[in-house]
Every structure is written in C-alpha cells, then in structure tokens.
Image (cartoon, rainbow, N blue to C red; front, side):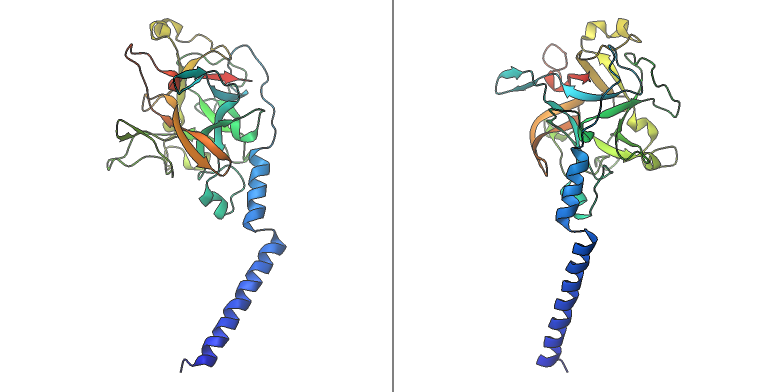
Length: 278
C-alpha cells in the first residue's frame, strides 16, 4: 500500500509545495530578511526631540539616559546611552516590523534621536496636559513614538501569586538570587479597568536624587539633564540599568529592570540615576 512509488510521489508533492511557498514569500516581500530590514528601518529612523525646554513637561519627546555607568571600578559619563526598545528574535520570526508587546527594553547606544530610543511624556490619564510642567512626585507615563494609531506604554507590576513575573520576557536579571521586575511594553487597548494590565502599572514619578531634599522638592519642576530617580508608582521600585549584557538583534546592550539599589549610606546607586535629555 505504501510502496516506493507512493513515497516518491509524496516527496515530489512536498518539494513542490515548499517551492511555491518560497516563491510566494519572495513575491510578497515576506521573507525574514525583508522583515528584518523593515524593522531596522523603523527602529533606527531619525526623529525629533522636544520642543526643547529648561524643565521637563508633558507632551514633549525626550530620551531617558543613565547618568553614568560604573563598571570595572570606573565611573564613566556616557552621553551615548539611552533607554531603548528592542524587537526580539521571536518578534522578527512572527514578522513584526513595529513596536509591539513582544518588544523588550534595554539601554543601548543612541548617538542621535531615533524611534527606538525616544519617548513622549504623557499624562497618567486621558487628559491632555501638553505644555504643563512635570513636577517631582507627579505621575506620568512614557509612550513609545510608534505606532501612532496604537499608543504603547512602558509598564511593569508586582509579581503574581505564583511568583511569576508580570512581564513576559526572555531576559531577566537577579538581585541576591531573586528575580528583578522587568520593564515591558503594553498597548493602550490592553491597558485599563477591564484589561490585562491595570492602567496604574504604567505610572511612574520622579524623586529628587538627594533623599534629604525629596520632601521639600515635591511639586517643583524637574530640570532637564539633571539626575533624577524614576520610581514605578505601584511597586515603589526604581528604574535601573543593570551591568548585565543582553545579546539582541541590534548587538550587545545593557539590560534594564525596575529594582531599587542602595549603598551603605541608604542612597540610590548609579544604577538608579537617570536624566531626561533633548
């Protein structure tokens, strides 16, 4: 019943089907190479920051940069690193060419303003506060620049009851053996009262870098390029850059987390120091 002729016929049929599939992919521009090129073009597309101001405000487009990277007993001020969005290998295989919920966050070289390393500061609700100054302790959200028709926000959250992480990510870091909270991207349609992610999980606020001045600085404006602590309002943990390398489709970059790091003097270390730049 299953003689050599049947097997040969099946092989020919399978080979013909694969040939037609490859032909359709090439004609439709859906090869993995085309998908990768399209993703690179979007993520590395130049953008414009601002409008420039002396203080941070709602509605402006900024880069979130670490103040310094302290590695190998050296403290290096690096102006070319910024919080950035990366597309994962799985996202490329699924042919995603724009920022989506399968993206991860890293700290990556950003010599110029690009889509992947630029974010818009928006209000924590649907009220348009564009132009209003952002103060210490005032909640805000960081919105990715793409896609325009579907806002994407940075978020994290507390661990679930089974101690699993709130963000699905292929990369994670540890602090004294415990997994730190990852930073993810969520769509506006999946964020809200009856959605998968509560809207409060996208809320952040800034604290003064000096703990002795935090109470009196509440409500005051935040100067641009001044070190600040970016706090996740629900978990009360700080945005942090890790000295852990992440191998990404864009090259080796540094991982990020939402974890508070303090020294013996009860002050946040360099991992939690950030600044908003134009």
